[in-house]
Length: 397
Ligand code: GDP
Ligand code: MN
Figure 1 (tube, rainbow, N blue to C red):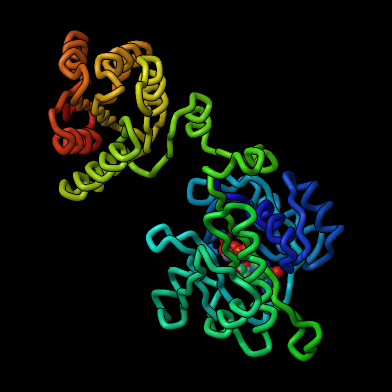
Figure 2: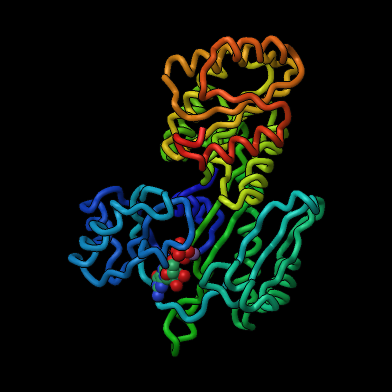
């Protein structure tokens, strides 16, 4: 689960990481009230679970009450890269002297934790890595060894924090690590970790977290009371919410081909096959979602899954890939028929069945005699057909 900035800040502050004072507001009036409390100048920041808000006009500086009102009125109705703004954070504006970037993330391949950092922060780290690859340091925290202040200090030094900032940076690294571990996070990122203060007043200078991004490991939710404290804002995508209510594993993606399968591995392979077909066909057809109906899915589960995928306006065709094991293909076929019946579906659906009751399942589909339903015998053929149909339009069928 990805947290909003205002939620991520809570977790950082619980570990004692310094950040400008900030208040979350849902409405323009609340934003003005918050700014009156915090003082001016302040920053008005869109709360969306996506980066690059600054470039998209979602982060603005306001010098007085009227400007806060104007900024909030402008930012609250915004949609940034397809994400609706969920509120604004009003934060005390700081005088920025320098920007660093620091993140800790889970590295599944090396089975430890990656610390990515640069003394050239501010913009997105991908951009920095492109332009100044030598300035981005990738270090590791071992899963088995203790990461202490001494180790954090050595790390801060090798990242290239300026001499005056090293002690504070080591503290921040250590506290970020505690935040990561205590909350079972998969990512804790501060960009910018800014040096703020007045240029000619040493005592006023300090490192401050001006932005915060945290992802939590969903598999650890049971250890954190299901993250109820963050729940109200969770799953903003209505299709993801509906899938969750039905206990389905669904992730919304950017493409046009709905993908449904049984077993996470098979669904992942299906996504790759669709993507590959889109590249080969030169259309750029890509998966619109990941949906795993799980093992032993009933006709009802299949029917609900197909309804969810078909109700996505982005979806132009659907690829259903079932390898029957505990799941019986005839049950899945019943589910497909009932959903197509109920929805009067007009989008093309390509099915590939193999394994348990595949023959019976194909018989059921054949009996439906619906021109929108196409059967292919391998995953590749089915993916190619679904990708092609997504771009074929009505006349292409
Ligand atoms: P992002 O674009 O989504 O990463 O949003 P950020 O919270 O990182 O804000 C974008 C940029 O706005 C930052 O990189 C800073 O340069 C700038 N910014 C944010 N807060 C302040 C502030 O208090 N003072 C100043 N001067 N700049 C700020
Ligand atoms: Mn940022």
